[in-house]
Length: 374
Ligand SMILES: NC(=O)c1ccc[n+]([C@@H]2O[C@H](COP(=O)([O-])OP(=O)(O)OC[C@H]3O[C@@H](n4cnc5c(N)ncnc54)[C@H](OP(=O)(O)O)[C@@H]3O)[C@@H](O)[C@H]2O)c1
Image (tube, rainbow, N blue to C red; front, side, top):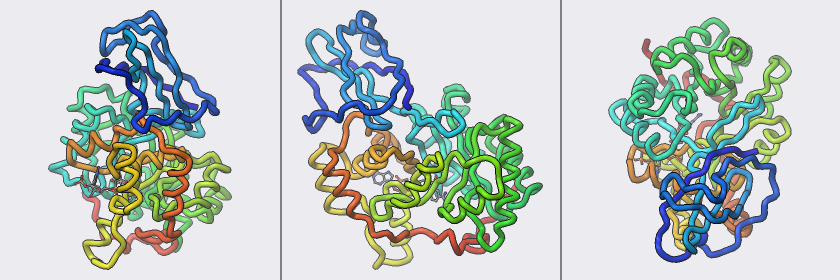
């Protein structure tokens, strides 16, 4: 289900259609829309809305057009459409990631992103920028209640009591009174008992109303199964490496069966850039793949927009990272077009079934040398 409010665009000259000129997919999902009715005035342009037509509705995109003085214009192209988690909480499908955003860059990136319509921010204790994320949210001028904030528990704080203390520390750094989503950053297979104890702490934080939802990150289906057997709350989200070179088909299907939202990290292949810094022979980012470059030209979009739109077409949540204002804006401008079924399938076919990031079956706190200060 999708909810949202309408955005009215200023009419430009001529008739507008989607950039490819193709018909949009037919409505085949339950949707709840709040859109301005005909006869009312578009808040952005001040033009009277004469008619409204629902042009497309794939799981997370809505495009509604209106006729203004004979010109067709987009009156609703959601910037942050919402996805409903398994406990009823609504989460924007697209957010800003801040992994490796330096403390100096982070506050401004958050301010820029919120001004551009982002309403989901993904940080983590281990990113060492929670303070700057909180500062950015306060400086944005947008009410805290309108922003969906995710942070993550780091492995060195696993265990019931340590997890509760780490949560307090994260909230203090963020300067927030509650969180929207709290994730266990990685499973620790060699110490799964501590992983489970941490999740129990998260369950308590959830029942105390200190976070609106809880979930996990980098869990395989086996990890999810082990957790399910020893916990009460089904994770709302599993945030995992996911891009066209690693499409996680089976894990996504497992999430669907369990009611877990799949959230893609490195949705535009940032993990490839990192790998290339240490291994020049590593595969280039999907951003550079000839198919993605070709599709970008076909749709009049950028490679990053094609990759992000592909994530959205699959009903996934994605959290691209950038600290550059023009890219932050570019990465959210993906709700005014749709990829054809054939093009989605062609991108799916780039799958190598091989991850580029760390293997969650062999991760522990020694894998990543992170020291989290108070
Ligand atoms: N749970 C986990 O274990 C985990 C692991 C990794 C990441 N994450 C989360 O997922 C987020 C995103 O993943 P990621 O940071 O690995 O990778 P990503 O979002 O796929 O890619 C980020 C990289 O792409 C560049 N970039 C951004 N927009 C671009 C555009 N439009 N065109 C070309 N290049 C662009 C960025 O550089 P500039 O900043 O210079 O633009 C950065 O180098 C993270 O920030 C973090 O929040 C979670």
